[in-house]
Image (cartoon, rainbow, N blue to C red; front, top):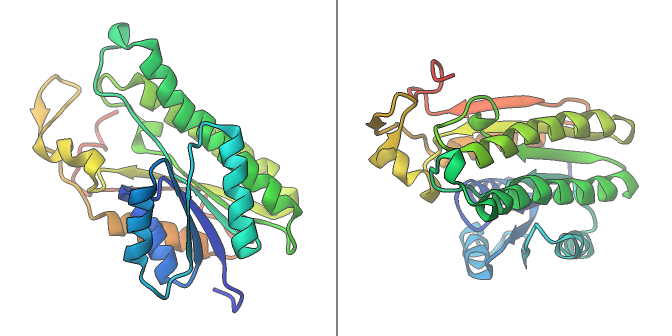
Length: 251
């Protein structure tokens, strides 16, 4: 960290990985904009950051361009600039066979995981390109589903594969403007979303097995490392998983 306080914006900051990353950044001295659909969980993240932390709460639906624009305007008005976007907001469907998946559920996942991620990345790109000093970093939350799918997860898997393409395009297009972009692909971090993995989740052979999980703080430390690098260095892709989860050998 330089003597100038860095500014981060974390989407999906009201729970899980987003909350853990926001707290890690705040604990390392960053100013942090907290974005998410529901205000109360964001307020709880702000409370957990502690009274000395520099955080701002902005309830935001990332699928709406006008709300994303307002989010970035508010963070820049509050803190002056944006050095980091952790593009984390995401959703999924229950395990549903592809021929039974309602279009509305497909569309809802695509709207958050892909369209919302694009809108936030676009707004971050605009801010980082024009601010002085120029540049910043975008870290996209992919998933091991960006590499290999789980059964009956076509919407989530498709959007996470698309996230990888977005990361590569942003990384290339950001070069002239000192905008770095990387992606973290996470497997079985212990959050509310992964509670069913500990109880038992369907495997490719049809069996139901409990899977190991890792502490979400370990993910947050990895994101913090990626975020703390100088813009001349970039972790392009990082995969962080519970060591014994059935990922290697799954695909």
